[in-house]
Image 1 (spheres, rainbow, N blue to C red):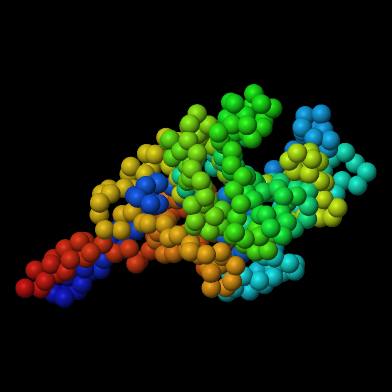
Image 2 (cartoon, rainbow, N blue to C red):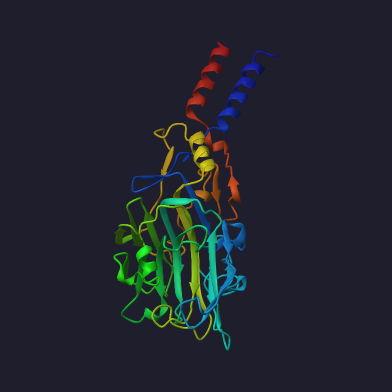
Amino acid sequence: MPLLTRPVALLSTALLFASIAWADCECGYTVNGTLYTDLLETDFLHTNKVNESGWMTQVYTVERDTARGPFGKDAAAKQVATNPLKSRYDWAGDGIDGGDAGLQLIVSNPGKGGMIPMGEMATNRTDMRYGSFRAAIKLTGQKGTCGAFFWIHAPQYLNNSHEIDMEFLSSQFNETSHPVNLVLQSEDSVKAGYDAGNTNAFDTHHLPFDPSEGFNEYRFDWFEDRVDFYANGVFLNSMSGEGVPTEPGHLMLSQWSNGDPKWSGGPPKQDAVMTVSYVKGYFNSSDTQRQGDWEKRCKEINAPNATCEVPEITGPPQTNATAKTFFFSQQQNMTVNQTVSGGNPNTIESGAWSIHASIQSISTAVLLSSLVLFMNWCS
């Protein structure tokens, strides 16, 4: 081999190994100093494949005698619709089918029937235990529904005494009042007929904006000893005590009605649409395989860029400028061995385990070592 060809080949090989070095954020994501190992992000503004983006459409019925209202509930696939933006470069505006872009959960009038059609989604992952979860939602202006963003112990509804809820009753909205109901379902609420209103884990918090006029981010941070609630990055309330869940579960998006005059009201006179533009979750996994995977990829937790801070919003995500929020899954090399469900056409993704390897992840240490070897060879 010629004199210069051999060191060049050596340097090229070294650079190849350097290019597959560990990426940014391999040890996880931090929220207010708390580290979470896993993430799930879904950009509903740019996808029309809901059941391939880390979520499952829920299909079931609850008859009126067990629905705790004068009507039963009919969760159906046709009540869930995707409506991505017309342009892949936009982050706000009308969808391809008109109206607000995003994931649509629809509650319809039952007509002469006794079952109210409703829309609901659940994450595929059921191993979420402690984390920071947020969703950008525009609630309906039609009276008579309950719109909800919540976490529940899995399997779904087997034990809904372990539940974290942010619920919106459209019948409560008027010109002067726009509340969100913050709830920890507990054994006490189950004993009270699933009524948390008489426990210390219930708060009706009045918001300074109308949730039906635009998208706003709703968030809850779940710790071992408490749950903190936020709206558009502003702290609302904190709840602690025996109602704080300890078991793993999954995220849910739902809009429903059972005609109960004390809660959902309704049913609505016409289709009521709740639209979701994104969901982001940063959390720890209860799955032993996931835990082992984290230990393998997190070689040095104090290394530069080994952990990444989750950016917080400072206002409602409603315009092209403010609705373009940060997704780790839409960046190069920041979601190694993570579930990424973005929907952005510029992101390589799958609903399962996704490995992102980028030449931009060159390790400085390996690169310097390669240069030293190169110089020694040439001398």
